[in-house]
Image (cartoon, rainbow, N blue to C red; front, side, top):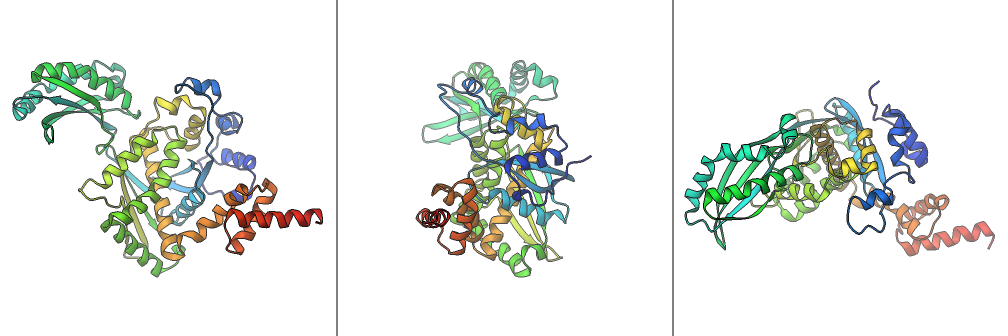
Length: 426
């Protein structure tokens, strides 16, 4: 049976019950998601093999976004984030898009690039041509470093060279284009770059300096599109206001920074949950937002002929299922199993769709009711916990401080003291 991402009332259950419901909805065996149990995730011994000087691990809440249909398949989506409202908002936006088929995506391919910096060339433009003439030799040398990748249909397939004016003079920059298949690709690309750098220096008759991948992954773009029902959004005025807010973010970098932050709330949460490199993805997305020379919104919202809202998003996503923490971290492995994705392309499709859903939810909140109303309702639970409320007290305290519009730690402490006083008869 296929996965059903529509789990009504999931929030009304305990964490253990939610895990069971999610496991059942995903058609998985309980052992597949055992690493999501609090005491069964990353052990200290495992962590000690991942980074240096390990002394502990740090936990981030992992929630599950529901209601997502992506390219015709339902997905239950693990999201690792400390920010209230992100998971709920993405789930609600996916519900609004669900009636129109959910999200549709496209993908440009699994291409990453390495840069080899050539310095001190007397004739940089001629050096550029000389290096291009050696393209076949350089590709063969690069592919000799990773025969496994080549056997899987990947590997280095192109070389481009630029003469780049800098304040230190004109530098020749060679780009090695590599199809990394289902890997994020940093290790493979960097190994190739270091292997061909000495030969590049010989051909150029000078020296090379940096030889490393670029996180501006503009040959690894993922695009997501969704139609959001006008009635479920709140009506025609809300649609028009979201379009106006979107136009503001497209035109103004100050608004675009916050607009894109909303997108990254969703993207980073899924990237982190699946053990991928959040810093690489974030730098790639923000560089893409500035690709025209001005920092702009990564998404656009428009109204279609039926009056519904159409959202589109294009982002570079250097993510993979092979290597790195995705394979070394048991929680990341469980998150990938829950997603049910088989390729890096499918994973990127999920991530982009969540980014668009999260963005829509934020824009809707801003246009319809202001960002604080829904956000602070969920944030109140964090405030209650910070004030010292127990698990059994959190909901009551949170409801009181929201109702009284006093969502601060000191207010939560007052409510908590009052509740405990009543309980003891004081």
